[in-house]
Length: 298
Image (cartoon, rainbow, N blue to C red; front, top):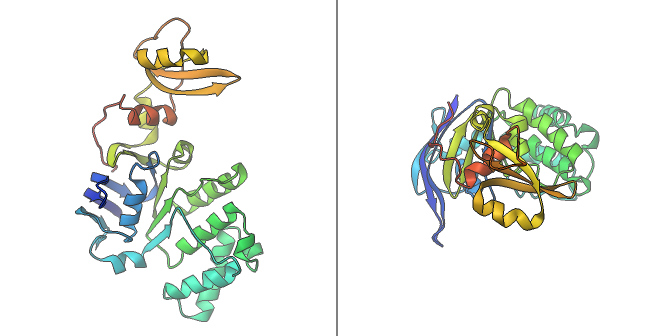
């Protein structure tokens, strides 16, 4: 099964072109949609989740027309939005049971067994009777995945799921996503590069409403082999380096400003080769240093 997106476009009433001819083929497994805030990621996710309409284009999940057969999509969809509100005084067990009823699971025994299984899968069973208002951020996100897994979805969409999580909760959430992404399509929309590099075997970078590049993360990064250079410089040199070179990124390291530059040869004395990673490729792409043709993931 695959999700086929063809020339999807969306312009908001204020004139913002949120999506422009977005095309992707997404197969089973974890798929990363990477882009800065405002790139169009949430617009695409909300459109695929049937929460808003596109102006043009099409999307097909298996044999379901996503834009026209919205009820059919909702029966096979699990969705964890960026903002996920919970009833703070209701227990995890009770609210998940309520969501199960809304999904059409009306048999009490079946519903109880399913709720217990999902709470165990998301490592929340020991907290099942606690009020959701007492949950940490990571526990709330895991509850969000539990509700998204109701009724055996064929497609799960998670929008910025690890923002604000502490390192331990983030690792736990990564492990959960990796486990559920074996047999269904899971789209992970994020601006956090390491989420994609850790989890996804396929990805796309979206910027200003367009898909800039798509493919296997390792193969994309390999394009930069031998072309990334690094150097520690004084902070007052940053402007000169930015004007003179294709500066991918800069960050503080041990009190020094460490810059990464894209160049086919050593830019100047003092630069040393750097092993490229997905963060280098991501920044080089959204800054326009890499002019890769728009691709589809097969």
